[in-house]
Length: 324
Image (cartoon, rainbow, N blue to C red; front, side, top):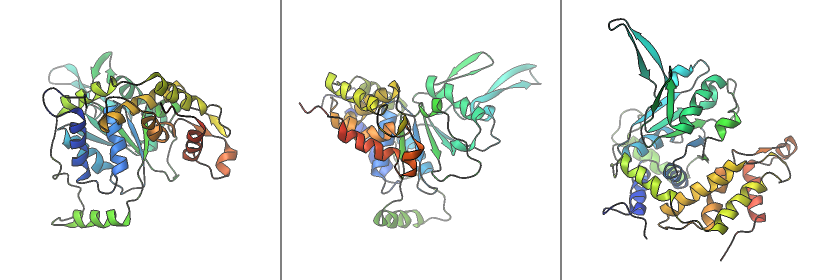
């Protein structure tokens, strides 16, 4: 393994240490942990979808603690204003000057809880900070801390008071990760651990030990970005994304951002697997999470009970992957 981090642990070892620490408190969600960690290493943002009580907040807090990062949470509501997200300008009567009060987006890991409950105007306040990692207030541009990652949640059940995310914002998310219910065994372990020697139902991440710092995570991101990807692997990622645009029953397929997302997460997946090169299997393994929010099905296909995941799985069987 040639991917290293100075004279200390290799990039693979450091990534595995982070994964191990998160798994100490987020029980039975190994695939979710992998995908979120891959998204962080790839320098992207994650859209989390799952029913309440599946550990989304715990995941963010544990991930932040593992690299001594800061985390913040915004509860999106119909009356949430853009200034509640990015910050605003205040007049200080004592000094007679205006000063800027930064919003909760100035953190390493931002949990945007139930993001689809806020109206489009407030959702759009996230666009600049997610794309540029900066906020502009009164003509002044301020950068967010590095690394910066948004983990937004939405409820999969259609409820009154929700607003669909605009396509431009959906495209800002590198992956859409589904958080299922844990298995019976994992749920038993979870209940046993959480209720042991604890009053109330507060979520604690005391078991998580910091194994690196923000600079270490940034180093992982830089190393993943330069991992070798053969032209045939790049072509496979592009063909997979382009195939969504011509697949029967797809009203709108993935744009060029789909191919870019596939290659970025494939590089991060290779690093997490301990390799310094990307394989077609890296692309294939993350294709569903990278593309499910980038395609729209026709009403006819939805009536038949088909989902975006079903379409992508069928599509992957149709697109030949390079094997040599």
